[in-house]
Length: 143
Image (cartoon, rainbow, N blue to C red):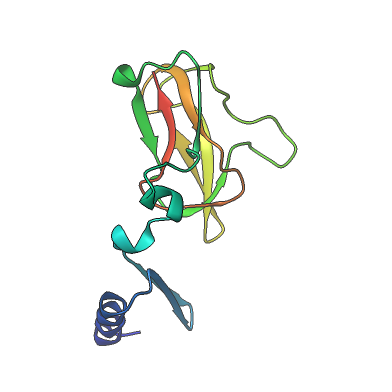
């Protein structure tokens, strides 16, 4: 796939209302996505001023001011355990060391480990397990 074709696809996504486009040609896959307009993506509960259920499990002792976010470094399928049926890498309240594996993100048959950026206690943890995450999605918070 040449650069002019990719630029055409980018322009198409920019002009349309779609938020993601995946095109595969031979062994090359191109994924183009954009952040949707905030106004057009409000759910009825958000428009009414009520917030939907948060995607993170939270410890009752969480101090928001001292928490350090752990965000997805890439898009893919998030796995909270090393293998199906095994215990998750971490649970809320666990103490972790810097560099300890917290999650695995599977992208295009490649397993990417997500390590703790610092030592601390897991204060919040995503409820997603076996589902898709996007780059920058909040996965956990370390207090």
